[in-house]
Length: 95
Image (cartoon, rainbow, N blue to C red; front, side):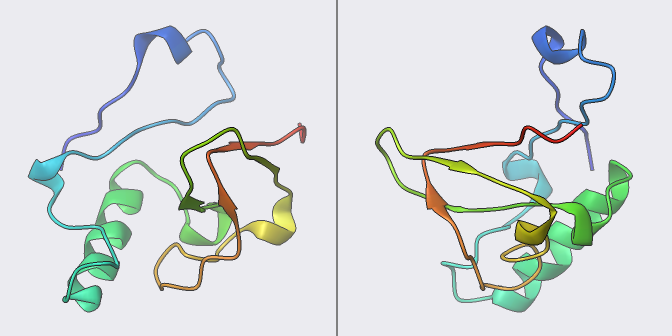
């Protein structure tokens, strides 16, 4: 599993960021094998040192919708298909 990062975000020392690619296997719950998607997500998060309970996810809606997230939004849609947010972008003002 390879961690892919954006060099432009390296200037933010408190930001953990990474994205997966096809080489990381299926992570979509829209495919038939949701158990494999969950396992692949767990493996990916472990590889970058992130606990699933701290992750916030959303169903992607193309447009200009932005969801403000808090800790209460964490752990939904991470390892199971129980998304609570629908947005084009997520923002957190938490420190």
